[in-house]
Amino acid sequence: MDRKQHIAIFTTASLPWMTGTAVNPLFRAAYLAKDGERKVTLVIPWLSLKDQKLVYPNNTTFGSPSEQELFIRQWLEERTAFISGFAIRFYPGKRWKTKFRLVIGIIHTNYLEYVKREKNGKFQAFLLKYVNSWVVSIYCHKKNRGRVGREKKAEFPCLHVIRLSAATQDYPRSIICNVHGVNPKFLEIGKERFEQQHSSNHQAFTKGAYYIGKMIWNKGYGELLKLLNDHQKELAGLEIDLYGNGEDSDQVKEAANKLKLTVRVHPGRDHADPLFHDYKVFLNPSTTDVVCTTTAEALAMGKIVVCANHPSNDFFKQFPNCRIYDDDNGFVEATCKALSEEPVPLTDAQRYELSWEAATERFLKVSELNQVFATEREKNSSKEFASVSLNLWKSMEDTSAYFHYLALGFETTRRAFGAIPGSLQPDEEQRKELGLATSSKHSL
Image (cartoon, rainbow, N blue to C red):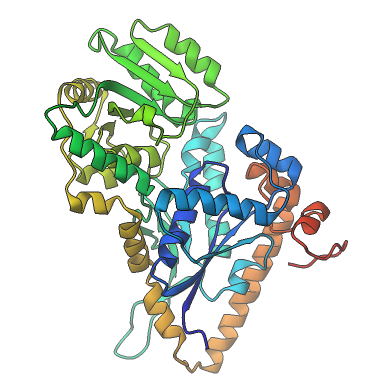
């Protein structure tokens, strides 16, 4: 009998879409399965061919799930240098809380902050906050904590939700912990820079400042260009390169060209590209991130990072090369100082803190998975009234999930997630590609 702990990781995106909800769950699966003590499955969406063309970059498409799985594994192994024995499965599936004994949610994105910046943003954010709480309560399990007297446990519902930082929406008794790490390639680059920095024959960093990110105003470009525009005199002589693709690219270029400072705008590239190795300072004034992946990558490469005093950057404050500012003058001062100094080499402990090994340890600790697994092996007796209460609560949850399914619908959910089948209900084309029975009547 297989006594290994089984862990399934569901996410709404997959490679080759280079987004955090595709990359981070993939690394999490690899490192959870690395020691062979757990059976891990990564569950990702399968997109129809027409949707692949909309979502995936460079017209990349796959004729079958096995073809995409091969691409994903090759990409991962090139960056981790080890073969991990986790499985990859594609949607659809049963409702998560029905299929799994424990569902833990990890909040990746600060949707409230994005919505606040839109038209009627405050009102939309007010509604979205309650919708988010409702959906999370439907799809994530709760646990009870606390005691009354010596024997009886008081039922204080606690959502199994991990927030990467305090920048996200608050949930009842959720846990704040950065359970993400960086691609090992960036740590390798950092080690190379460290060796060069201690060599008298080679200068480790020969370029100045840069920023990389999806080129939309809400991803830090608005804040950065405003800071540069308002302080051109104090930052005279500054040269900065911006890298990214996005719907606001033309506007960003236009705004950059109006500045007296030298601001060069380039198409997006992989952050591990050798082009970025020689930059010394990463400027990131964004306040819409939860935990910015590119900031972690820049620190791992041994660069100095200048970022805002914001909850999304709390994790990075422990690193000596993270320079935090509180206001415009602080940004100017931190930027000028960073350009005039050399980065402090990371210690082994600091480098480890950025790794996926450390992130996996943090995840196992805060999720209490090991404790849950041990408890599940025991047979617990239940009183009749507790069973009735549980069944009533389950019926309420099932009803809520049904209304959520009806409210969103398959097409609406696909649009909300950028053509991702979040409702788990595939169309006929997807059923054929996944090898499922093609019938006009499906059940979740």
